[in-house]
Amino acid sequence: MIITQASARSADEIEAQRLLAVARYAILDSPADDAFDRIARVAARTFSAPMATIAIVDRDRIWFKAAHGLGNLHEVDRRGGFSSETILDDRPYVVNDAARDPRTAQNLFVSGPLGVRFYAGAPIVTSDGHRIGAVNVLDTRPRRCDEHDLATLTDLAALVMDQLDLRLATLSAVRTGRVVRHDAADDATTVADYAEALQRSLLPPSLPTVPGLSVAAHYHPASAARVGGDFYDVFALDGARWAFFLGDVEGHGTAAAAVTSLVRYTLRAAALHYENPTEGLDELNRVLVGDPNERKFCTVLFGTLVAEPHGGGHRIRLATGGHLPAMLLDPATGTVQPVRPERGMFVGAVPDATFDECSFTLRPGQTLLLFTDGITEARPTGSGCFGEDALRRYLTPRVNMRASELIDDLAGLVPTLRPDDDIALLALTADH
Image 1 (cartoon, rainbow, N blue to C red):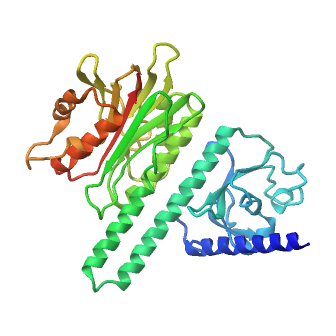
Image 2: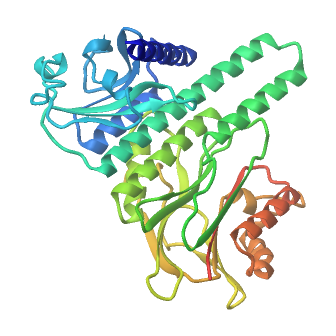
């Protein structure tokens, strides 16, 4: 009995802290937001499901920040919502046939006019571990989903969390600005801190360890008080395959940041669903042009790699969405050569954009360098651009450097170029 009471107190304390986290984000009953509506539509389209929601679980109700396919339904009683179960665990919650599942057979969503038969939800988890809601997809027919589907749903929940953090950071900056208007130095510090925190949320906190490969990256903001649109990522697809990308969203500020976050998670989800990286760019293009309120586009290099079974190195498939070529540094020949498919349009600019890919082997000792145009368009003398040719000349004596050494060297070069745009760098070296 004592154990049961202690457990109950613990559960009450956890719920109290969770509700404080919900309140901290000040999201309940807020107006409709295109960013969240777009994520709900992406979830529905990804699962080919008629309904999808972004739900925040309050004390006695489940409130929908976004609801696709539910008409004018904005909230439900907490006792009758699927999200109440989803927030009990960090893993996705799935009901394959709700009418036959004793957990849900009496649920009004199931027995009522909506006739829900399938449900999958992934919890929205704050950085301090509170599950404040869920991203859900619902269907009127029984069905199953695989691990890739659930990974996509989890990524979309993480994207929602990014949007909530962006929104909270903006609110905090505005509130602070209203209070500290008399001190310009403090205002500048507040804006810089806000921009830095916002930018960090758009980049991976660390790069993974890839067997047989050395990986390094660097991000240089043009201004401490401005959020940029450059992005990169490296992540595992399965036990043998990995994906990577680097790109640049048009514009700056919170609008570009929102698109950057959407691009990152869309590409992550697409990499799990499509073996061909050009199909991943097709999916990203559909997402960006599918919303009439979305007017931004991006350039991207998007690739996959797998270790060669014989001879060492990694086989790379690299697709382009209008981005600058990567540079291949080869110590065997002492050369630096551009690598990019011949064709590839901007992503998100037009509905019928086409993309292309190339494939090659990154051999032991070779390094592939991806970069954004902030470095090539820098004007170190105040006149002409640094340019791709100058970058190749700079890299040629450094073809023997491994990824981390090369990135450290370039990080030292970048400030001397006096760039007026952000710069992202990503290097991959095949181990000997």
